[in-house]
Image (cartoon, rainbow, N blue to C red; front, side):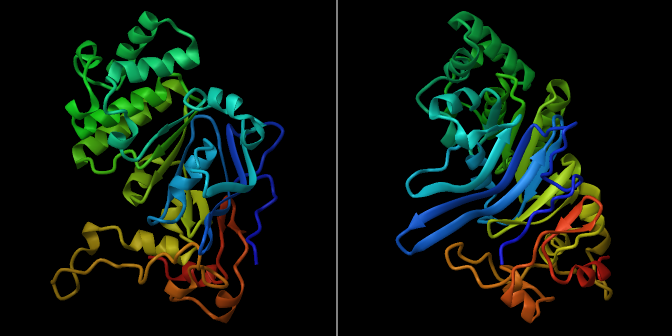
Length: 352
C-alpha cells in the first residue's frame, strides 16, 4: 500500500496561503529503468523548506538522500534515471514543468548544491578563479573583471587566505578542506535562495568539519538561505538542523523538529540511528567493561527488490504480520511529528 501524505495545514509539505515555502517537494518519484527491473531510488518523498530554515535529511547510504537533491536540480542521469512522478516547486513554480533552458537559469543561481566530493565536482584542469567567475558571469551578467572581483570577495567570505593568489591555483593544489570551501564559495556566489548540501563535511577531519558547518550557519544567517543538509551524521543534525526528515529505501519514514526527533523517535529505524551514536554516559557497561555500540541488524534492501509491506520490517524488532503485508501510511503521531509505523506506540514506550 502506498504511503499517504498528510493533508492538514500543519503537516510537513503543506502550504498555506499566508506562508508559501521556498521549496516544496510533493510525492517525488525518481526511478532507474534497468534490465533487471525498476530501481525506485526515490519513491514518494515529500517535504517543504522555508527561507532561513535548515532541513536535515538523514539515512544510511542507498536510502535516496543524494538522489532527492539531484532530482531537485534535475540532474538525474538519464538514461537510465527518470523523474516519473510528483512535483518540485520553487517559490510556487514547478521545476519539472520548466524547459531545460529555463532550468539552467535556476541551477547555480536560485538553487545551488555543494556536492559530496569536491575533487570530482571541480574541473581539475581549470583554475579556481575561472570556475567561480564563470558561474558568476553566466548567472549575474557581470563582466570578466567584475566577476573576478566578486570571486575574490567570495573566497575571502569563506575564509580562504590570500584569495587573490588562489585565483590561479588548480583544485589539486588545495587541501580537502580548502576545496570544500571553494565549493561553498561557488555555490553561494549568486546568493541562492536554496542551498543543497550533500555530505558537505565528508572525509574532512573533525576540526575542519566544525569550521565548514559553522561557516554555512554564518552565511545562512547573513544571506537568509534555506539549506537542505544531507548527512548520515546524527551529531551534525543535532547541531545544525531545525527539522529532520529520515529516509529509508527511497521513502521518508519520519519527520519532526530536531528536538522532537532526538527526544521522542516514533520509527524504529530512527531509534536505531540514535542508539548507534556514541554517548559518554553509556560508554561503559555495568560491570565496568567497555559497552558495545548498538547497531541496526542487516542492510538496506536492494531498491529493485524491496520486501513486501514495510521495507524496514526484515530488520525491525517490532515487526508483525501486518508490517510484512502492508506499508504503513505517513501519519501524524503528535503535532508536527509524522511517521510511517504500525507500532509507533511501542517504539515510543521504550525510548530512553
